[in-house]
Image (cartoon, rainbow, N blue to C red; front, side, top):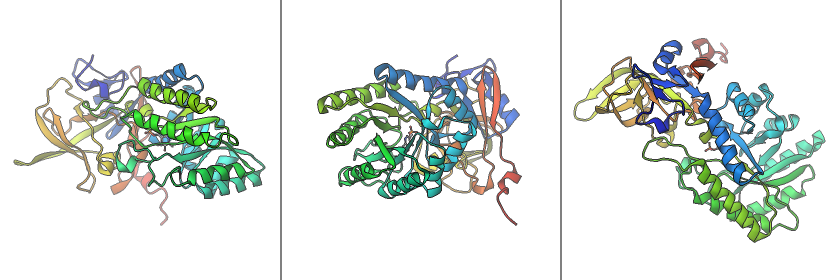
Length: 436
Ligand SMILES: *Cc1c(COP(=O)(O)O)cnc(C)c1O
């Protein structure tokens, strides 16, 4: 059964006879009482659908495409296994993410190691485990990696992270491919050229391609086409000495957080990227390289729903009604960090019309800990369950223990069964690393 905000929810979402939200065949009100809140519910069918949609839409237009899941959006061992089962590779940005991949025996040749300041230990770990690609961000990393590879007697395949100088018109905190960015070698200043020539001169590194990532979420298609043009034109300048075997436009594919801002379909991103790539290769006389795309948010975002229990309610007459939830910036920092917007539903009464405009506040000790500033909701009472859709990406992965709040439970639902994939932290867990 469909309901008003269904497009923001997982593909299995529905409403049962009691008017409760159902995900993966599970009544979320039951899930909330079984596992407690805040609770993150991931729908397995949606995760698999999204993996398959990216593979299908890109490979049908451009068979030589690799789909690499950008794991910083959310990673734990259960999810890493699922990603592997779907045949995707993994983009990691830290030793910690690589450790999760190792824990589930993820094939290391399918790993892309990113980051603007990889440590010596991280680079050693990458080499020791023979990761497929290190995406080098700067000259000092190139030198450090070359030395380490030499000592280990290895030739490491690398890509260069290029900053093409293209603005994707997203929030400044999540814009990465413009000139003034900490990421990558800028083309405009000549540093990309310098980096490329230097990389080619290093004996223990094998430069296979160029990478860029513009930012996230990117609701427009054109920035991808423009940046592909810029990066291919750059590569063509070095045709004589460098063969571009791989190109990656990164990730950044948008999802719907609110009903009035729908994302482009995956197919549209695929058409734009592939047509820019093929037409530009033709006009520049370049062989068509392997295409590597790195969706993060678009794989896990829609699959995840956050559930909270309503607690204190305070109405400031004529001004605002605060409805406080039992989570907030500790499990979802995005609204406080970059003004991210969400919608919410009353999960226990999905058929009720919105009756009042409230502010859904978190329970953390910051005035900025507001999850949704103006949410049109049915009347909420203490004990009600509120669900926030599109919560799968960059919420659990950015969760903190601020106020020493235990981080939330995560379950995976499928065919009426809920499988715990991360238990709630205990108070003992919170002191696990403390020495006294
Ligand atoms: C964050 C990131 C991605 C994924 O971004 P999404 O918006 O989650 O798709 C891909 N590639 C790189 C290099 C990144 O840093």
